[in-house]
Length: 548
Ligand code: ME8
Image (cartoon, rainbow, N blue to C red; front, top):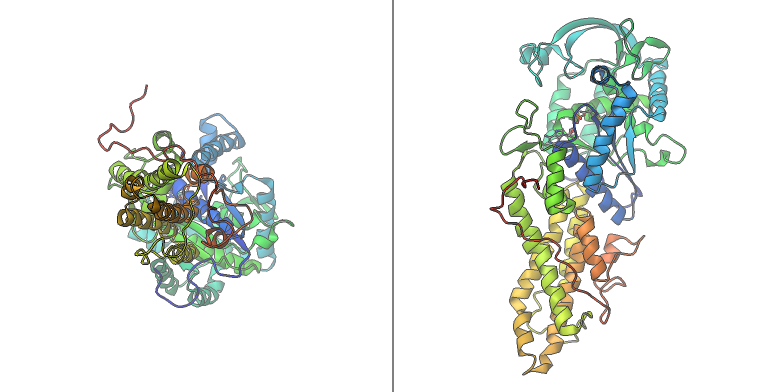
């Protein structure tokens, strides 16, 4: 929860476009849960934004020009392009497994990106924001980046990531005049509380800014015979644009076309804390130099760790695409998406990917939660009302149940979910749907429709009350499915089809959810009970599943 006045996130009433991005991932790694997580958060945000009626554009993709790519291509006897095509394909496959709805899978080897990135750098050169100078620094070959003297010293001159020695290098380099933008950046961050989220991260960035900004190198000299893979420095083909600088440009190059320019500035750049500095300081300064608007929010989440330990290559404990495939195969993509969104490292604390926790969440909130509630209500409507939505009941039918004011309860849940979406609290927004399901459970416990049904033969007059109770349950669950759709589009779509309440296109969430509105369940319309949404999982079952 953000406790400061002002705007609290990237969404605000009155906005019409919503451009959401993930980092573009290095192609050399196989896709893993970290990449899928950020992209899942972006997907849920994009789906909420579409439900809000916003013109939404969701970008994810791959960063294909790192030096490591050249080495890997050589090692695999492929051209760079063949190698990146192959690796990018793995990301596309992983994202399809999880049902992500990106509008573009953008790749920096795309000619549009390369041409526009070069055009931006040329503009910076022409106006003196990029200049040629001498660079002496500590280079981390494993990460393809330079460390500042302070940072290199702090890490005893070895890579903070791999522990391998750093190399002291002097190079003729082009620099970006980052120092020039120090005050403007500090003012922008100070003036926009929603610019860096979560707030604790914003404070970290502000703290680091106070140490002062140095100009940053934006190119690397090519050695004789070295591959020219990447984006070359405009007017000086002996230099390649440093991959980070070029990669950041992707967010703008992707939409810097006649049909898409109106999508800029982006609503939100999503990433983990590792690359916040690039997104919250270097990129905004570049945008200032380019005369472009600032993204509304830069949101840095924390990390997934696995069973309490950092995921790393040396531990070989990544939840990688194969593991992801096992979860999707056994529980469905939506179950994994739900787990990622509600149990993931949004905010500042790391989250543990634990199989036990997955099963616990799955059973409590999906199988015994939305799955059970919809199945109970669907079965009773099928059995006692011939599969037709019952009447909602006239005055007095629900006497004694006034504390369950469903029109108010559902409207409050929707408002609160929208507010949480607005501050990028997608777990909170999704939980509003589950909280509504819990209220329906409490209502069923309080009204005991099963018991009423048993008395029907003796007291047929009770049928109106039973019908009204079930109408209220079903309608509240319909609203819950709307709030759960961004996280679980497949399962909620399945339920909406069997319940005959597939949301009409072009209608906003608030309109769809309106209890008294035209999208509410209509008495008399067919409501079939459908298949079990989420089969209960056996917590004692062997995992991973044994093949065959
Ligand atoms: O940094 N937990 O690419 P990258 C959560 N190409 N998220 C994680 C994670 C974890 N354990 N591990 C990775 C790059 N991520 C550059 C980006 S953008 C212009 C260039 C996610 O492949 C998270 O989003 O190393 C993190 O920021 C990103 O993967 C890093 O991806």
